[in-house]
Length: 82
Length: 457
Image 1: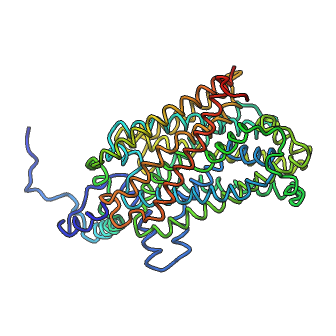
Image 2: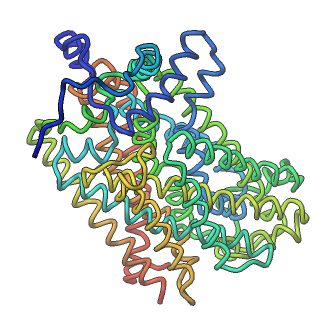
């Protein structure tokens, strides 16, 4: 495969005046976002929270509570259908 | 995150430009408008640009089943207890939704994403599945509400499903958060039809207030009362609102500088939702003074018809239109919350600012929930009334999990920096969790014991 020749100038060089306003506009837009607002930043994973044993136990209690009461509501709903 | 931001900026090269995505580009245009309004001190313009997620969450929650629940409250028990109860519930909702808005604006991440990453996959998926389940049930109830409203105009369930799906597809077509938000916001303001309906009903408030001795309402058993209280709580604070407002605030591009406007947005939504909710309550209460029947009769398709006989056609017509609007707006906001949760938990693009080609999961989840719910209401003999009544109760039972993680995230100093909850907000937040858990448990246990014949119904 042949590499493109670099010694030949671009057929129509882009005038500096055409590029600058667009770039300035883009820069202005980018400046409107906070750095940690970019998708590249928000895609970075966060570390796991360090939870104490008490909090972990409380969360398990919550999980059991929701499962039991949720099952009761669903049972009642099915019972009422009959 | 907020605390580390300043440090990162200080150590980063000044001309380093992060790679821009399609989502960044769209969001930066919205943010540029906000910055221009701020620079030129255009206060009303700034408020106009920054309102949205709070009003949508609050008015979205004034959905079909909620308005039916409020009207049923009024028809069953009058205004007595519920006039102060509804504003108190929306005050609770304001505290919760303000936290969501604050977390979204400070972290720029959605609720599902943060729970998944900070508390592990099990809790993240638990929350997402919990949300998907309650959202599906609620979406069915929304289609029921649209169907009830359309029945007044002699239109069938097929029209209700078509209307809901067309709206979802239309609002998704722009590929911009701003466009989606403004369309839904415009529709949501028609929630005021319930207030118009109440005014047109010309209620005798003195008579209603005098006749609303709380326990002397028609046919009100203790279990019915618990159902009404639980469903009214479930009509005001729900898991989808938490997912939605946090993710929408992040998607809108809100930052800590916008927290003041975010609070105004949420407060305005709470006030409007309270007024319109009270409108539905007053409409229902007009039926109480005319020896109205029990909740079962009112919650079905007969509500606008019953209203027509007592309050006149204009009031009934606006109530029916209100039900259609309430159901339609809720379908859009609830579908959006499902889509945000799906995208965040799977870890793919989850923004209205991304085109469908680059956010297939987000857009598919948005449409799929509405599609499945619409298909269910077309099944002949499906127990739609029972689903509509129990949708809010199920949401109430599952709500403590979402609220607990929300309070934990709002206290996470690594994420929130100096914007963590204060003591008062924590005290209110924990009280709300306890109150919601008690309401859900009381109805769940009482109904269960009745159904297994341990106690008499």
